[in-house]
Length: 341
Image 1 (tube, rainbow, N blue to C red):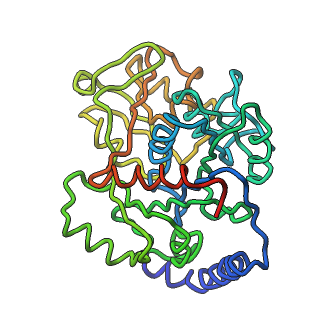
Image 2 (image 1 turned 120 degrees about the vertical axis):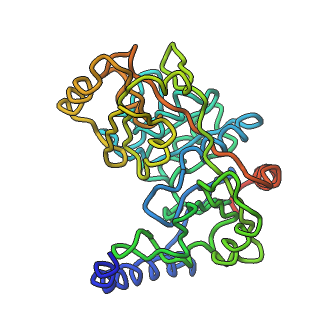
């Protein structure tokens, strides 16, 4: 692996040069960014994935939708459509993408839209009546045509951007200097019992600016799996052989939490579009047993596998400490902002 990285390093230097020049032009005003007269919060990462962005975005939606009319705008990765689409009763994962559909399906009283052109997407959202009071940009840390008022940067425990390289030798979409745009940095997927001493070591490695706070979160798995009408406790499920399905960037924690002797584990690429033959294979492997998928995969499998045997495992992002401080920082930005600054 190290040898391969060395061979790819010249390409990474070239990629880093291109992204560095692009960021320099945006920072200097050579390339123009668009601002809007509502608070805009961008959530994302420097790496290509696996930082736990979806549960962190859900956390943000739950926090803000209690007080504000919230809209979420995503690119809609993996959808089979193009352009701006506002989610409605006809929405599916194929129409708006798996993550936006997950937000739309489970989080009420919000608007969810997709558009690769974020400027166009925000413009369309602000034409709605009533118009959103704030907009969350999902996975938009590198989308610099829009200048968000607040950036939340995620990095995964054990896979920090400070230890990584730029593509293709590593997994970074841009250089580590891009972290300077963040208002806060969230280290995700931490062990729930991570010590204060280890947190301090990670902070020292990330080298945040004096104005940046670093927070630590863990993934909290639910004690049950669900489908549209039924709930089964994980303890009860453990005694039964089943098929576990994961098409996410880093599925090991999901498998480790649910697996028992005799289970079949099926791993697919992130945002995987299941073919008819793969659906048939899952039916054959399950042999009338339960099929348990990640929540993101469930929205793509729903309607294609027997409803009474298909379940998903919910997850949430949980702050290990200083969660109230994080909430206050976000709420203060929204309350004090009449636009992007």
